[in-house]
Image (cartoon, rainbow, N blue to C red):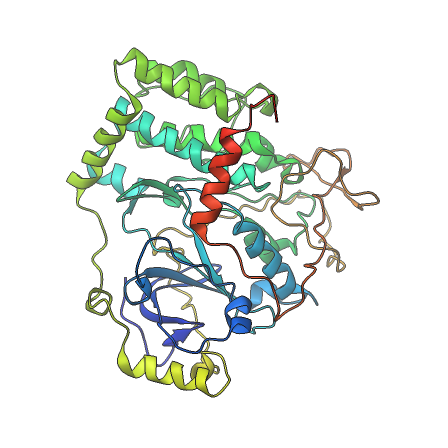
Length: 462
């Protein structure tokens, strides 16, 4: 966490005061920020920012800390409807409601030249730092950690999304338990190299934790790929290393250091064939069986995990500006002046544009940046520039794919041709044009709706 460079970093992004730079990565810059309690923010502007109502009582605007991520404009260049595609992706991510996923709070209006979004700030260490500092997790804490990942992926998959980049750096152990970051945005990183089309001989992912099919046939990736990543992350939590030193092979991983009670479950997950892996319900049953064998309950295991996190003392230290609980009066005054004048809160800083130094690439949370893998067959001629085509979001293919979707030729990393497969289902453009987009329901209401759907999912009389 670094102080803002006022010659480079803006002070306000949308209705948020920036407090510190968390890090920069291949996709953009991440800032610690706080909501500005602005008066007279019109309903139209609030809807354009897609502001979510905070949970809880009182006015949290003076104290709620968020992470604002500004996407590099280069990620969206070269496509006429790039900002609209980014907009759809953000709206899709907003549909996920879970305590294991940070809430998406706001995002840039559709026609903004600086794409950004804001989500809840999770004060904690990621799994990699925790394991490197304290050693591998014991049986109970690791099982509790796994159950939290199951809950997160269940919410993500339930919204029709895939994560596609689950790894130790993308799981933060906050004050209320593990939280999964950066789901649904993998398509932006994919677009950086392939304009939303994985060209022949290319793949994308964090290879120590990505499934065999993700590394060899990216267009076919579905929920079992996230299940594989979950197992690989659990393997790391138990051993301090990924299951493979290289990409997933046709031989079993080195099980040295894995607790014997975890061997049956991880042995089912870490397999090459996606169809042989258990689903999330099967993973949950396996983790509960591990706890039962150890005479532990999920609640006790979660307490053990919390004790490990607290003892590690790795929670990032906040800058003094974040501890005051109130926005900078001068910054608030300038932002309020912009609102009173009929402009957006960031109007006084509209010309600012954050940059990413070439030698600074620690990722969105100041950690390791998202890995990318590109393999090209040696005999393959240089790829032609892809023609503009409809946006392919990070969504699970529905049972009935959209008709007349063009096929994309996919070739495995070894150079073996694979049959043509249709790309993911194409989402229709939003029905309500900017700036009159319908406001999103409060997160608390969405949470209640999710709980009701879960409660009545197996009722035969409805």
